[in-house]
Image (tube, one colour):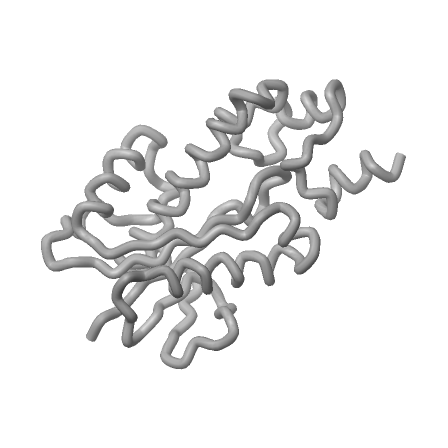
Length: 186
């Protein structure tokens, strides 16, 4: 049975899009490398992502900051998942999704809480999505270098909050998220 694992990253960030990946593993993949992306160092994640790309069918789905603001973060995350699934070059017979929500319109799926720790294809999806999003935020940090996105990837760290206080918000900030919303309200 052709099974795809799906996971998203960036739901809790103050800046940048939410990104999902859908991954169908090939038999040649080294399963020992696959675990929750949060438990792998930045450098090692990039190496493992390269291995996954060579030994899987994968696709990325993105929901923009504007879509997050318009829909809410959960619906935007589900939209990014749906986009990733729809972009796969092979149609999966079963979709395994990290968490307890699934995008609308899927027929054969299963949601799995902590799936990125339990299911190898979901682990692979978490790694692919995390590397893609991290690299996107590193690229954005070249233009917006006051927020330390090359290190915090848009999460609300002290350096990011200090940058916000000193330089204000950018078009990449999620205006509906509490710290940003509070700044706009003052």
